[in-house]
Image (cartoon, helix red, strand yellow):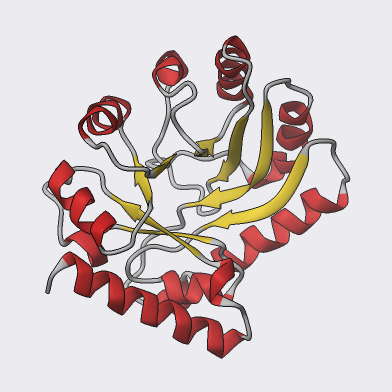
Length: 229
């Protein structure tokens, strides 16, 4: 299967999932997770109509952005160290992985330097896995309130990476919980906080994520094939 054929299949799956739950497929955006994949693969996906790409490593992202001369929308979706934020400054449309106030402060500081606003998502570790990034859901409102007070950024929603399970139905409760968490934050009426994006769902479970309210699905393997770890 080619990248173009894979993308066509995924778009059909998105349409089918939306029909099942009564959603408009135009409300779902596919983030092609291109980490560990060469620029040529990104170019092939772009030629097949894919415009939105997600990277997880700062240096790899910077290298690819210099190599690719196409009007792509770049999202940063991986764990982010505060000392590397400066390399993303002004280059990403959305950072999915803000899981602590200190990181938000550095994003705020860097984007203020260029007179721009950073759009971010707050990431929560709903499965409480030690191996994964993400804030504790019990501090969700506290974190959202503190981040909302920072200049130079805007919270646009939430992200989660739930525990992996081969059965997507066993992951559904985590997607549902993220949606509930977004509603709780929305109800607080915090300034410059808009719960319009839910980043959740990957290659094997994105249809369930869509059924539970995802607006951004992060798909890599199903588009590009297995990556070298």
